[in-house]
Amino acid sequence: MELHIEELRSSDLKEKRLDKLSFGVDFTDRMFVMEYDKGKGWHSARITKFQNFSLSPATMAFHYGQAAFEGLKAYPRTNAKAALFRPERNLRRMNVSADRLCMPPIDEEFVLDCLKTLVRLESDWIPRGEGQSLYIRPTYVGVDPMIKVHASSKYLFFIILSPVGAYFERGFSAARILVEDEFSRAAKGGTGFTKACGNYGASLKAGEKAAKSGYDQVLWLDACDHRYVEEVGSMNIFFVIDGKLVTPALHGSILPGITRDSTITLARDLGYEVEERMVPIDEVLEGIESGRVQEVFGTGTACVISPVGVLGFKGRDYVVGDGGVGPITRRLYEELTSIQYGKAEDRFGWVHIIE
Ligand SMILES: *Cc1c(COP(=O)(O)O)cnc(C)c1O
Image (cartoon, rainbow, N blue to C red; front, top):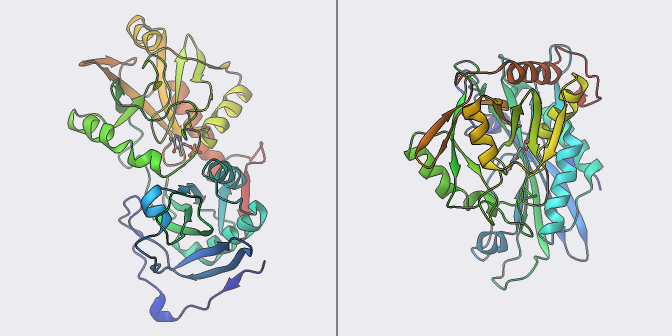
């Protein structure tokens, strides 16, 4: 398949306001789109101006949620246009999500090339301040115009770009997280291990409940017994227990985060022991009280690493350490962001430079 690149007119170009950035509000001038039709396969790959789609009200994805997304970032570089962090992992995971939702696979290598071309064309949109980046959102939706419950025969795959500010604008600070013991995010056998769009709509209620009680995010427990820790809905979770890193094992209901994987690799390389296993919430709360749980942090593309200072559970706040940022959390954050922003050597071969 060939990639067609549309020439933009000067009237298509937006004013770049990169000084005041909130997450996911502004989009760049261009986007990537390709289409799939059963019998024909993928076709019409193109980079066009960022514009609305025209879709039937009967569009499959609106009714039955046959849709998935990804999230990654392009980081500013001084001696190149940008750097991507393990983008091949995102495209592989997109195909895992696609398979679970009965959507045909995308050609990962081709889409990675198109993504790099798009970022190269839009590199003036990459904010260059500390901790800033260009957020990349690949999205994949079933667009059959029929409301029969079925796997679509037509698909749209697109990539949009959004300049984003630093996640920790007011300094690296610890989050307050509510342990959710009523709602569930994902059950084994469901779609928890994918970035299926429906997972996120279903999680909003718990997020609102947490916000109302003064917490930043939700820590999900297993859907069956609400006994074991799963993840934070847009982040995976790590505990430092007796100096060892412990994170819930992947067993079908947790999203296998790329930052999680990178953190495990990096931590082991730095000499920390890392355990992936079932983590009972009782062990965590007792450990916080006894001091055995020394640090808690989340990992995800948006924040990279987010320290957790408080876990709220059944009306009580459990303060981790002194409620601030622990030394291992800070070290992993600095090491990982240094690789992403090119301040440290890319010793694991994670970075794709865009010249
Ligand atoms: C995207 C996401 C994460 C983090 O994954 P990364 O690949 O590290 O960005 C964690 N949990 C959920 C539910 C997610 O959607």
